[in-house]
Image: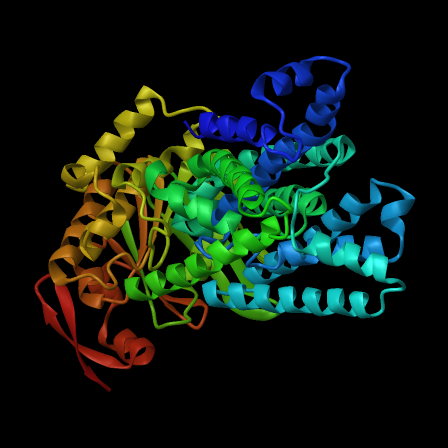
Length: 319
Length: 254
């Protein structure tokens, strides 16, 4: 059902754009080789719709896997700072001109950034940091990344580079091309597959690390796979869409009761659900302000931040 | 018949801090062995060695006459079941799903549970009288019911060696007695049951053998009423006890 929802929304996203094309022209445009409609459908609408699905899937699966690994419903690429550092990596790529030197360098820098922050989180969790410490650690990582990003902005050589960085940081899927899609897709897909291979280990972690180990689960292997999978998927998603926060937090949390609170079962539905959510948000952004003054990342943060607070209040009540 | 789990001259520690020294013990099949001793005596560390979470610096550990280090992770997981201290479920999964986790060592990757697995889960649930709430979520159950389910999870492994770390702590008296009875039943099926206990009354009543540990060493090893004599109680636990027909009650600090 979630897959169907994601597909329907993805198709709806294809129909949205400044050129008012009817449904039939978009469909024929997607399949034909020439004509204005085919250029719009294949070069503009399709990359945007597909990237929305892909970015959502990456964030949803990453959120579900991180929550399973840390056994903590607050873990998420955004909250834990992975997105911010991926963003910093991309900004560095912009700043030093790597991004324009070769298109593959931008996602590479973002993935390296995501990997670095995911490794710090991993070390924090290994040092026995609890739920609160992890979130605080994430806050520290995110603030550091934000500060360095601000430094890059203030040192920015020209206003054009600066505005490019700012727009990109706010998180948007505007004007994405097929080559953006081509770079992001394999990384996201590989990342999610890696997360799915860790699924059974995440189930065993319900019992705690030592009991999971006693069941023959290689805990270090599970951690490595989750950290690498999250870094690849989130890094690629951030490189493609900028900072889209809270999606990885909200979607797994909402879906969890429907999948019996089992971490393994949750990863794939979270990917589908988040794909649907990001696509819906990207459609909403275009409906609310057709000139796209409301960036996608701002919308998800506006909706996600209150949810995060509500989640923390709920956790306190449980204790 | 040789004992399934044997420690020979084992010494171990964490980062240069020695925790265990010269441990030689054998744990028999079909018996409940109680490990007692003050906090920090090294009881949990002994378990960690058996689970290969910690490698001994000196000495050898043999499981079913085979050196522990030579076991594959899966075979080891099928042979030693472990119930950690203060065990809890970190997500409120359905009770039966929790018990089913005990079958992980028997499942191939990505395979679903077989008929034998389901039977083992049913058996573990009914032995712990937990069948009636197998469909409930863990957060809907009482602490005593959760403890029983977590124990059923360890039983579901079907391993010939069972390690339980303080399973009776934090339980009310009725649940404590229930848990000790379950340990005895498991031993009567031929399992080598090894349990750490702070409660000397439970240890003296329910264990076939008691191992007293202090400061990383084995102080005494044998039948409960022989091992827990006045000298040991005073020197290790700094208490005196009143003696019943088949057990002791810690009575006074000395």
